[in-house]
Length: 114
Image (tube, rainbow, N blue to C red; front, side, top):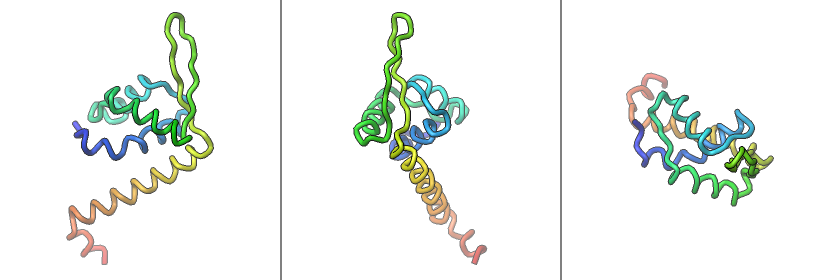
């Protein structure tokens, strides 16, 4: 299982990427998709996900729409144009970060590349 400390810095990127790929999702759906994609290695908590969604909305990266589902209301999230651009940037930034961390953790591979 991935620690919350590691997950904390990547949650915005994960949410933006999922919304980019799936269009419109609601909170529980996001948590289940992350769990499915990671084969249970990442389990998002409500305390982590919803503040992230609220921050993304405040930054105008996502919008929300409430839909009545019988007696319940489900809030769906969708990327804005700015959010779509940011999703691409964040994913590339994270890929670069992973490559750099790989170099730090395994510097002997760098010697073999040069």
